[in-house]
Image (cartoon, rainbow over all chains, first blue to last red; front, top):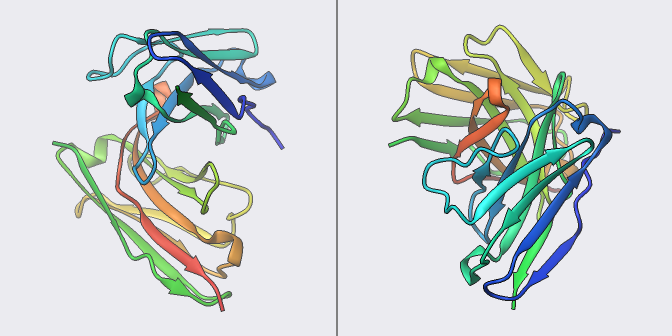
Amino acid sequence: SYELTQPPSVSVSPGQTASITCSGDKLVNRFASWYQQKPGQSPVLVMYQDSERPSGIPERFSGSSSGFTATLTISGTQTVDEADYYCLAWDSSTYIFGTGTKVTVL
Amino acid sequence: EVQLVESGGNLVQPGGSLRLSCAASGFTFSSYWMTWVRQAPGRGLEWVANIKLDGSDKYYLDAVRGRFTISRDNAKNSLYLQMNSLRVEDTAVYYCARETHSSTRLDFWGQGTHVTVSS
């Protein structure tokens, strides 16, 4: 079955840059969106159409995509950014979530 | 303010049925696709099904096709998920989400409702 692969975990020091990748052969010519989920909370959209930031999402979040890989970047990472992050893409008749990445800020 | 409120989650035996509801407010419900997403305990997000603005198109995760039915009532601003022949592996928190299909994004989510399938 089709998968979107993310690194299980990313660790970053406060103020540094965290990059989370999402890879899959069907990401070519398809938009990815990204979701942040903190423990016990519902997911929140933080990026769509690869690099569009919804209103209310801090400018330190940015996105890009090239070929088979979409990337979510958090610049100047803050402790409040510690969460699980998931990518999402539509493949003709189904949505596929990435495997998820736990971002730890320490 | 956009609000999505799920209800209907419960403990049910394997083979049983449940109907989840999602009450929407704060936006023109009939102008948006809607989606159900689930999350099993300690696991990642899994898309379950979505439905077009007028209900004319519906798509399902392979694992639920034939057992689950997504529907909507635009007059009542409500989304539903009828779940039949439930399995232990359907145990999860079920979220409804507003979908902007053209940009493939789920921009607002409900708080979720818990479904536990166990004997």
